[in-house]
Image 1 (cartoon, one colour):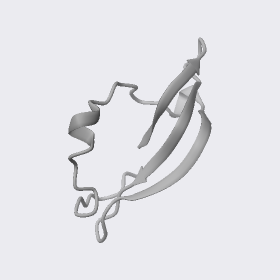
Image 2 (cartoon, helix red, strand yellow; image 1 turned 30 degrees about the vertical axis):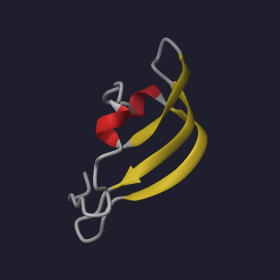
Image 3 (tube, rainbow, N blue to C red; image 1 turned 180 degrees about the horizontal axis):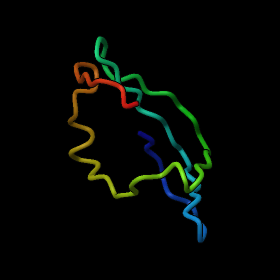
Image 4 (cartoon, rainbow, N blue to C red; image 1 turned 45 degrees about the vertical axis):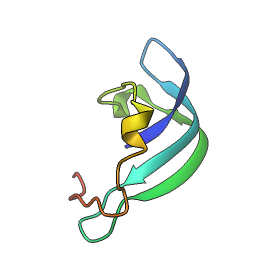
Length: 71
């Protein structure tokens, strides 16, 4: 799951995220965050785009959150 500031998109839903990071979920450890900076994601890899409530997101305990990887 990628988090960042949407800077642009095109007709095929390719998107440009700035100040982005990826949240990598694991079944054994907490969520790892990989800093990406400016990042382009192809539209065929996107399932959903939405707005995050920063006050709710900042209260998430990502260090204790565990989940099975998709795929």
